[in-house]
Image 1 (cartoon, rainbow, N blue to C red):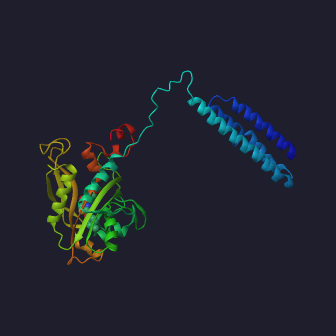
Image 2 (tube, rainbow, N blue to C red):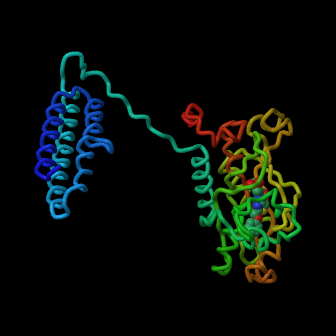
Image 3 (cartoon, helix red, strand yellow):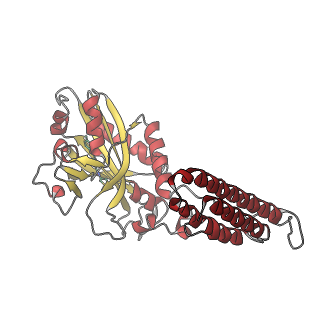
Length: 341
Ligand code: 2U9
């Protein structure tokens, strides 16, 4: 086909498409027309492919001409579409403009995020800086530096997600504190929020991806008393001024001595209920004095400084606050569930 022939054919197609566009009554019809003429298998697109069959010297001019026709038709269809939309919006029979508009669905801040932001406000109020760090961590920062020796169970394949030799999805946010202490001399007073990963069998209280806030205060003369005072104030500001807390001995490789902090059950004020498993107390966080081996790992002198550290599960605090009994609800994206917050 000669280039003149091609050009004439393109014009003919475009004007036919234009006429059809004027008689389209809906956006859907217009879209169908757009596909029929300008789509990958469209009539005009097919013609453009013919340009390749022309003699080389005729190709450029013909190609430009056909592209111009194509762009003009595309513009015409866009104009037709907005004219249709305006027409649809215009007052007319059967269209009651006094009807209220359709309120666009408004999202919510996820309950986990709400809790995280509130907890971070409490810690900022208690003088803690907020630091974040990588979720994909080096084994050294996630384990070694935290006095967790190679034989420690948490280092086993089945407990942690290894991405490569020496590279693991962090199992806690403690590596962030190590990274901060490496680049900052004491005093250090910080919290590190974020996602953590552990190979776990998901059930109502365990998820392979969960959220933590861990905190640390290292300075001269920091005592367990400072730990208690700080965490009891945290509990009052988070769960209410009437909150009572207690500390039970525990064990973590990176703290010595270690403890669990419980609060009087917010459901039954200690009487015993389903929420606290009839214990009257709810375990909310673990804590302890930073192990000297950890201080040495970041070249702090345990003779000079001491520190306390703590860690809490944000998912758990969120479940306590909103009386949620299955952690999976927090990540299943069920709009009916999320709409409550
Ligand atoms: C450094 C030194 C010590 C952080 C600590 C805990 C106790 C703890 C758990 C809370 C809920 C993990 O998600 S959870 O199951 N964490 O109980 N975390 S002490 O100790 C540190 C951190 C950093 C440098």
